[in-house]
Amino acid sequence: MSDNLQPRGSDDASFAQPLYTPIKRRSFFMYAGATAGATALVLAGCSKDSDPVVTNNLIDVGSGDTGVLNYAYALEQLEAGFYTALRDGSYYKGLGANSAEKLILDDLYYHEVIHREFFKAAITSGRINDSLKPDFSKVDFSSRTSVLGTAKAFEDLGVAAYNGAGQYITSPLYLTLAGKIVSVEARHAAIIRDLVKEGDFVGNDIVTLTSANASASAGGAAPSGSSVERSMTPTEVVNVANGFLAEGSKLNVSGLK
Image (cartoon, rainbow, N blue to C red; front, side, top):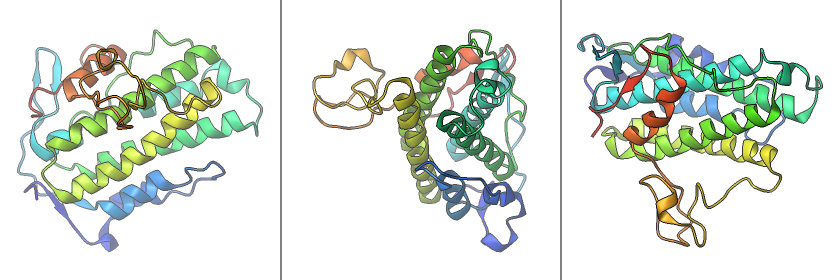
């Protein structure tokens, strides 16, 4: 167990209250994101770590379990920022009030905000900046194609990131948490992919199903036909994620190994 993040009893987890925020549900993934966090991890800090280091204008997430949690926190900030911006865009605002598409996007927004707030409350020592600045200048928030295509990219990236970072987690507790959250992110990815193209909730680009070309994926490619979800290393992930973060908010994950 990390000495700067300690488990406590659930009764005193005041910071975990965002995880219990009621959300109207209809879609199949329900409240899994919140309950995963709430039941798996209750953390408090002992203030032994120094502040995160900024080198060459890159935010260093750190190393060890804290580094992995910071890495996850950064990605959740990015995802939450995307869905927040999406809801201000004309594509989202043009959707019917009770349309399935709008309600699904609302679900994903609430999930990602809850995940972000959970990590913010949990990492009380050595936490990275709480206000990473996204750069969504490449996203056309008036376009369904642009919005859903970007959502698909973020959700697929999130799943691959959790899968790839699991090997760096030393605490069984944190590994359990990551496993639960990645299952939620995978459901996000599936439903977004289905919105983009009906029936395309999974494919060779994310799961090695049949004749996938290993060279077409990042480092997590599995043998053809293995049906293994692909993973990406932190370096591979930030090469993509940094493209959506503004200068001064880009990440350095070299300490994760």
